[in-house]
Length: 461
Image (cartoon, rainbow, N blue to C red; front, side, top):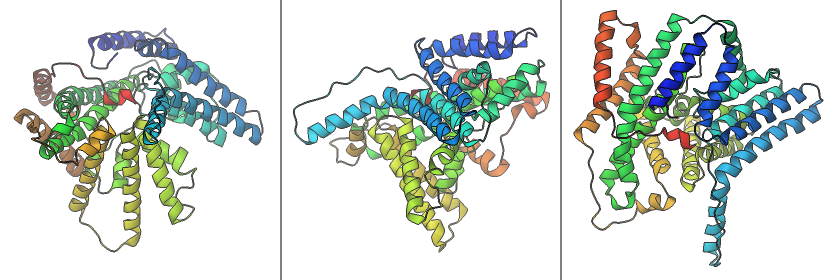
């Protein structure tokens, strides 16, 4: 059930009508609709969602009454079960690919057959979410949630279930409690939620889905295109993935805001970052903070000396790359960012030259741009084929309309991020100005509908 499908609009309409009803148990309603939403993808996925939720709920409850040694064993049950399920569904075929590649290198005439495993949507997001809860209870950072209905609502909350933001239990569960006890809708929340929905749908449908048509054409046959075309394709993918993922986040946050729930901010103008560390403080913020709090710091962070700091940065980003997908290019993408972060840290410690802000922003953007090329190639062979000479390579320039849309999106990012330093809000304008702008936005929205619906990129992770 895509956020952009007519069925989802009906689904959400019924949900809010029932949520407005004073006699309804709102947590039960959220759980029912979350199950319907997730089950619409594949009903069997619900079994995995229930299993993951119950394991961490049970582990956290048990940790309350045992000593430190037993708590450690219990939290290991959570970590092993979550990572075990994630690894089985997501990385089994990558492991088999690595084995078969090794057999090929050794010239052994044998191939391990691949398994036909369907990856449950959103598994990378909700396993990290439940695992962080169990770790927080183990550390004593929060008390276990004893109401299973509330914990299940925290895990399965349908606006952010499929592609985040990755929420922390101590931030979301109290808001669910408040939602249950406060039956009134707040007009300010509805207005702010509509603003986020407007922005999210516009970014997804007008920008991301139209850019996708050009990007997919190039990257499905990248070995046959010339360098200029590949650079164009990478540039459009850079802004496609931003508009797509931040668009999803805006829609999720908008739906939550209308209910009175504040979901975490996941993007903060990442392409105006002035260094690669700053980029990761602005891009997919809930994942980068999760990796920092539950991987980088437990590995030792920057407390164990220079070499181990670089090791920890490198391992964190490689595992962050693997989180995105079971493919060699995602591992290479993680290695690339690990190296980039290490170089930046080393350069910062030298303190020998101050780079002008505009130059550092351009350098950072180019660094990130090349990383998106690594991220987008469909196979590692495609990545290396780009650096080989080609016979009569194709050229495919973007349509002028797409170039104008790209420049408009870049302009908005620079205007809001650099000059306003906040989002421009349509709903805060004068009523008549707002009506005119909404009409213009509506016309642009329907005039720029892509020929077919595109799934959100991060649904595959």
